[in-house]
Image (cartoon, rainbow over all chains, first blue to last red; front, top):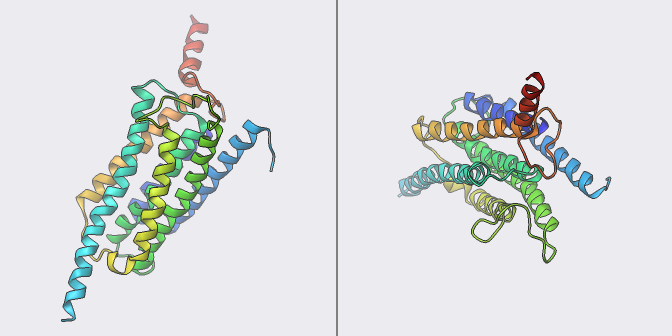
Length: 52
Length: 210
C-alpha cells in the first residue's frame, strides 16, 4: 500500500505540475524523493538484517 | 550581425523542446517495457523494481517540468532558472535510482546467481535501469552545461506536451493499480512476490462466503 501510495503521489505531482502550481510541485517532488529513499532503506536493511 | 546568434539560439531551443519530449517519452517507453514484462511475461515486480520505476518517473518529471513551465506566464524565476531546476530534479532522482538499481545488481552479482526475473536482450531489467539512470545523469549534465543556448524561447502551448503528459499520467495510473493489486492491504510488497495479493484476498473472501 505504501508503494501504490507513492505512485499516487507521483500522479498528483504530475497533475499539479500541469496546473502550473510550482511551489506544490517542488514540495511534492522532495516529499516523493524522501519517501522513495526511506522505502529503499527499509527494504535494504530488512533483507540484510542491517540497521543504520 | 547581432541577430544571427539569437536565431541560432531560437533554433537550438526548438530542437531542445523536441529532445525534452523524447526524454520523457523514452523513460515512459522503458516503463511500458517493464509493464509488458509484468503483464505479458507474467513476472511480478519486486519492491526494488517498483522503487526503480518510481525513480524513473521522478527523473522524467524534470524535462516534463521544463516543458510545462515553458508555457506558463507566472513568474517563478527566469526561463533559464526553471530549465536548470527541471534538470536538477532529473539528476537528483537519477542518482537515487542509480543507488537502488546498483544495489539490486550487487544482490545478484555472485557467479551462478540466476538473477531476478528473465533477462531482456541479455541483461536483467535492473541492469538496464543502471544504464537508463546513467544516461539521464549524463544527458542532464550536458544539457545544463549548454543551457544558455538550449533554453526554449517558444512559449506557445503545445499539443505534443499535453499528449506526452497524458501518456505519462496513464502509465503512472497503471502502476498505482497494479502495485495495489500486488500488495493488497499489506503495507509492503513481499520480497519475492508470487501472486497479486489483492486478487487472492478477494478470491479467499468469496470462497469463505460460499
